[in-house]
Image 1 (cartoon, rainbow, N blue to C red):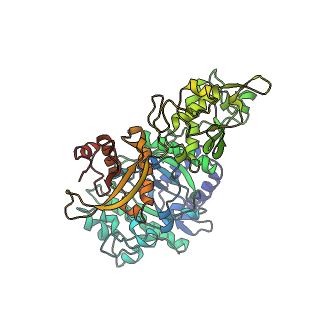
Image 2: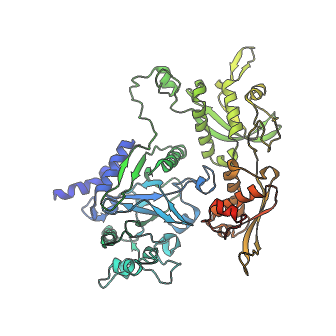
Image 3: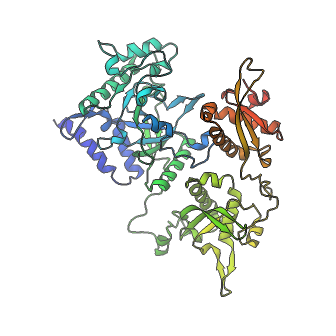
Length: 576
């Protein structure tokens, strides 16, 4: 009986531990404990069996940020479900545990992609929003399946069933789904797999279904002389949720690039939800004889300031700064709030969008050595605010100039005395203002309306700035010699003048606007565009480089994502 006590206590210990904002060290302890616990079933409060996911293993979801597909930070948040997922009712995660072995989460979507950042779902007996709907020992193509991603796969000829029905009469998952597909078409191992259904059941029935899923995966791994299982991953379908409601234990990453994404996710999550969530770096096993390891190496959050305030002056505590070394102006945060407003501007004689930033007390007294760090926080918060990414667009140069001007400018108050603008309650900065020199910005009291060149043409040696890059888009049927006898769906793109020949600094903004307008241009715009962000971008870059003044231009999603930029250029922007 004593052997069962830790299993019975573990879920409730987890819940108590997770009830407050965890430090990374606390989360790391929880993650390692769950990963190393290889039970087949858990034990509920009344001694009843419950699924192993209640007290063991990690539900890991790999995600991509908006920037990876040509969007901007803030276009969506990785912890929220897309409209399609909400309609389907479930989304995908993979179950990671010491006895469930796999390499990193690599998925085939117009080429192999490594989903090496995302989040670890908080699971347990008190988390119904993460209770598994179904699972399979390999990628089950849940997005192509009926019945919440757990039923029949529309891309196969077979009718996929629940494993509880398909694996009767001593049939095994390995014999039924793995061995027939192990030498070719290995993607059908999961694509044609049954699924272990766990909905509308008692706890005991759910526990047995999850146990059968684990047994099938271990049998899959134990087939000798193959690495197919190790190079694949389990798929568990978990319920979709309303925005900001999925319980998250930690954000995760695996390398420098993905950990940079995890920091962005962590920061946005804090801004949107007010919750602190740590970052756990996962090093997946390199072979079947090793286990994954976990660390807090990627979590940038500073250690909490001691409650006693030891080592801090009263002024530093009030300012929110830690006072590193001899410099008391290192800030815990530089801005108390960053919001977007629409206001009348007497200089521009128009209503304009303005990012209204309220500096922290510490943020008001920084020197030039902290300007870059402060502006990075301002930009991140400005883009993360609702609609902020589009309003901010590519106007960082002029917004930074206005921000620095607020720190540097001194004006006369009503009594004729000097007054430093940095102590204004809020700084209102407008993306529409032209980029000018620092000296000009000071002369204009930070409210420039004239530039060295017209707005849309940059100025001061900066790249061209466009309020909008694309005048219009339209889907149409066209014919091409390289696709004889076929009508090809093409996107006609008409640029605004200042977008002609756009360079690398504008590519992300151009493509984000192009995709948004393309999806809205036709009821089937999303279908026409598909998952072809890469080829649409490379064709557009090629056309901008080779035919800078051509307008309109035509890009086609039928063309392959696999063609490199050099291959696209060599094919005169028309790869096949």
